[in-house]
Amino acid sequence: MPPKFIASKSDSGPIPDHLVSIEKRDDGAVVVRVHSDGPNEKRLPDAVFAFRCGDPQYAYWLKRLTAALATEQPAR
Image (cartoon, rainbow, N blue to C red; front, side, top):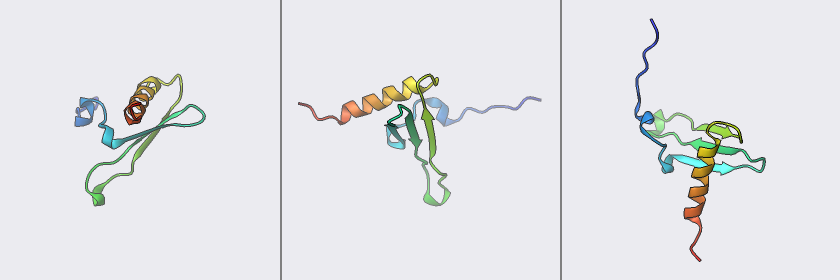
């Protein structure tokens, strides 16, 4: 019998900004750190992913990084 998959609340949309840190390295890779959420004693380690140009999710994370940097820039 094939395994059954249950949708979780993580399937409901993008990861909230307060749980994500995104940076672009000198080699062009986009590094995404998803901060663990929950009580300290039950908190899992952060999840860290690196995406390079050509990876399916690279453009998505680069766009989120660009948008975050644009909102941090002071208006002139």
